[in-house]
Length: 176
Image (cartoon, rainbow, N blue to C red; front, top):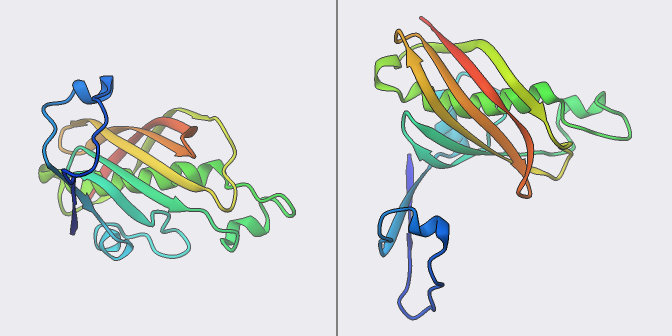
């Protein structure tokens, strides 16, 4: 796991606190974000090309929440047939990419370590905009609950350029 520390320098002007900032505890001089590279993600998830759909984790709270990036490129195999002359990322692959970000979270829940997570259900999924080559899909997945140390439910959303592309609830089951 790589750690990047962002430091605010005192000689730069600091903006006035926004409503969002005032809802959090006092701002510190430095913030630490945990970042996972593609290689580190591969240590946590079994997915490989062409089904590894998360390029990087840019914000991560182990066992609770993760924000991942998928860089959508025209040379991905599904664009050959979806659709010729008008490539659009299939919705099922957007959902799968969100689930893979969720998988990173699930692998770090202490009582659930050491198994394989499979879809147990998908609820309330809605697609809000098309995702096309050149887009960067930013996926935020948050753990809602874990039951019987075997099932988990997560809230997921995917955005492109700050616009909601997809959202829904994803359920996982742990198999040994």
